[in-house]
Length: 316
Ligand SMILES: CC(C)(COP(=O)([O-])OP(=O)([O-])OC[C@H]1O[C@@H](n2cnc3c(N)ncnc32)[C@H](O)[C@@H]1OP(=O)([O-])[O-])[C@@H](O)C(=O)NCCC(=O)NCCSC(=O)C[C@@](C)(O)CC(=O)[O-]
Image (tube, rainbow, N blue to C red):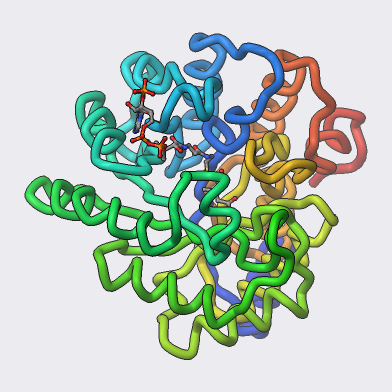
């Protein structure tokens, strides 16, 4: 109790938010690149367990070409079988109108369109230029309007690209702004290959926040170089209040060879708990979910907190 009061005061003193939103991307970003088959039942279990742990935003699947990303081919069944909570937003990735229509068939609450700040990455990932990708989203924005469906946006490769290397922060700002003007309510800035450092992420945020409000920005940080938590702290210091994360650090992008998964949700929640910043997620329950999915997939739990708790290190 005392620790909670002290840490809350600490967060306030440092001008950090008292609450943040975690976008749990494990069932989508986390599983899209799994080597082995992942059953629909396991995906459904994962989403249900994340719901029970208090996650209130879960990206549960992707309506993309099954040839491009076979692991997401059963997203329709996942959406049809999950036990929904009214308190949770169940979202899906939709690269075009076809994806949006499927998302609506299975009552996804929100959709996300995705492009990049790197032409080379976009060509590999969605087989078109940045400009063409945004034109493809126009029908999605149009179709979303009548039903008031919220559209989130992703900009990949904000801190570097596996194909072209350096990415200009001005390009990140330009694409972000365009997505917001077109109709995204929020744009998640993706360090797709996890190369960003507190210095480079601060430089990107400084550039983007020249013209965009921090409330319209989220950070989506892969943890390849172990910088993601430090980068989240930089995000908090810049007023960002939404962070994407993946339970057990699951994942990687099929078009970013060698990149590890998103920062582990358990690690983020542990850090935020320590800062007295609320997420609504139960760390103890989340750790169980991370251990469950890691065991089921036969992979090492990518969350340091998950491993520490499992090996009975001291945990308040
Ligand atoms: C974008 C396309 C479709 C373009 O692919 P294309 O080949 O240019 O498009 P197309 O319209 O010619 O369609 C090709 C085939 O895909 C089918 N198709 C077309 N659209 C759909 C759809 N919505 N749902 C299901 N099927 C679809 C379409 O029907 C056709 O089937 P075929 O006639 O060959 O049998 C393709 O390249 C694609 O689906 N790519 C998937 C890319 C992807 O999912 N990448 C991983 C997610 S992004 C990511 O991880 C980064 C992020 C978001 O996490 C942030 C970060 O970390 O930076």
